[in-house]
Amino acid sequence: MTDGYTVASLDEIEIPPLANTARWASIRRHFDIQSFGVNAWAADEAGQDVIGEHDEVTGGAAGHEELYLVLSGRATFTIDGEIVDGPPGTVVFVRDPAATRRAVAVEPGTRVLAVGAKRGEAFAPSPWERSAPSFPFFASGDYEKAREVLEEAHAEFPDDSAVLYNLACAESRTGRTAEALEHLRASADQSERYREFARTDTDFDPIRDEPAFAQIVG
Amino acid sequence: MSEKFLVTSLDVLEPEEGADGARWYRLRRELDVGAFGVNAYGADAGNRVIERHDELGTGAGRHEELYLVLRGAANFELDGEQRKVGVGEMVFISDPAIRRAAIADEDGTVVLVVGGKPGVPYGVSAWEAAADAYPLWRAGEMDEAVEILRAVVEEHPQAGIVLYNLACAEALVGEHDAAVEHLRRAVEAEDRFRELARSDDDFGAVREREDFRELVEAA
Image 1 (cartoon, rainbow over the protein chains, first blue to last red):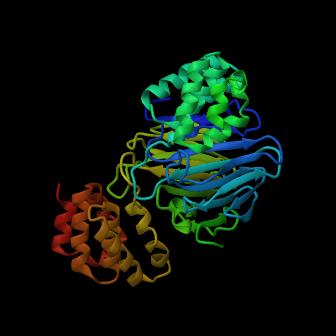
Image 2 (spheres, chains in turn brown, purple):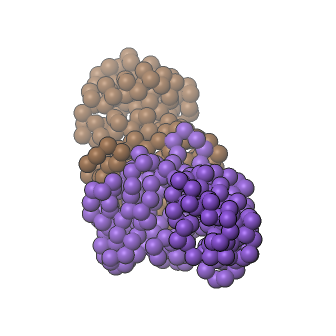
Image 3 (tube, rainbow over the protein chains, first blue to last red):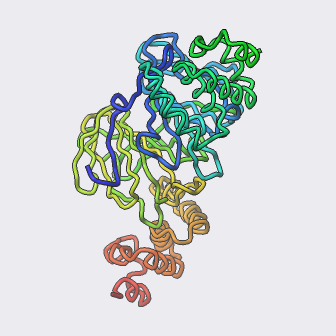
């Protein structure tokens, strides 16, 4: 190995999944790629989301055009209501950032590569990646470590609503009730979707009976 | 199909002949991807799947490049170091100076390449734009090939490899003054074209011209 290039496999860089989510290989972050976003997602079971439903204009998205390539298994894509069958080798290019997209694994072991960047602009990592370093710690139940990582992200990006929300989750899990409520409130004030997420997110079970929590989630 | 998205497949998309005979799946052009470069290359065992190149040439984009082996396996050479890369394995090359190449280790090997230049919006590299001319060239439709190469040179006036190939094409179609002028610009961009031109049969028609001889023989 020399400086200037790096070799890795998708299997070795995958992080442990959160409950019911696809396994995630954060390729861009692993290699520190600076000119496009690239990730791979793998579903172990048929019926599981391999690409969660999203568009590229709301909630921390960066307006990317996205290219999906089915690496293994088989996925069914739904793009603004249109269905696309995706055996291995299928390439789906979603040009319109406003289009809602999702892919569900049809077979166990379905893996999809996603590449994205914004046309006409120099690349910058998507805001949603800022919370990403904490996800393995949530998955393994090491909430204290997740909180530390999110504190750092919060210090760097104090207005990032996703970081605020995830930090609130970790604080709730580690018994920091006042901080959790403060950060959840800040996140929900910025984006209604976090208010909605919080209603059913088990990370908030430790603070669910607090009067302030009920007031925030409405 | 709506215009919001496009679908293709490595099993459907007809590959073009790429460098060294590799099967070139021109995904970026097929889908009109505008934010990053993306192509796949295929070859059978023992054949070159990734052309030997760096990203420093005046026709290259100084891209950082991510290679992902999709099918088969490939023996990569990275600045002289050998590395076998199998399905699901990736090589990321951040340094544009690194010389890279790969030979297919199995029949049906396919390698995906994604590239872009940090800090600037993506633009199609000169070498990729010029590649549209080569199938026409091979089919003998030289005037159309010259037209495409001239358009690329217009947009990328320093792209040595495109200037050089335009000069070759012009020499072949009898536009000798233009051929020598474009070869001069190619040599100014990258000196290696001086030596290449000395033994390139495409320049047969201008080889005896004094300005050509001065150009290729100058130290």
